[in-house]
Length: 128
Image (tube, rainbow, N blue to C red; front, side):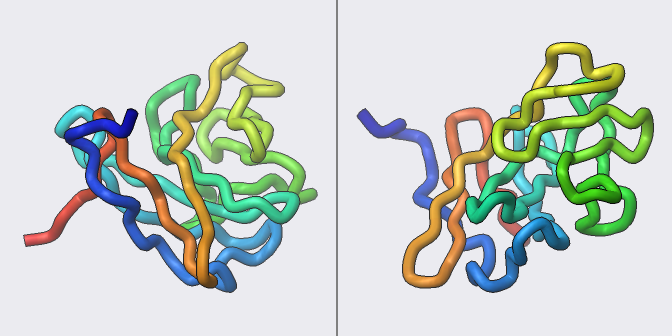
């Protein structure tokens, strides 16, 4: 049963903007009434999205705007403490994040567009 208070899917970007293991597209959401950055990237052909918050220390992880993958482009790596995450699941695989995981945001693709799906806890950040 769909959540009654969830917003409809939100257009994030064109599918072509998410290059395989390339730069992520960043976007803003509201989580528990607080603004939070999130990001989407393509890994093994799938678009995935997470809150930009390390499971070790809740800080933004990108090295530079949109740069989340390690040098070999195999893992998402926090630029602050080196926590390493599996891109397709968000599970921590190495470093100070122990058995934590990134907060996943559901995404879908249709008609050449990527959409993210708000939930009761993660809502669109509207301007104005």
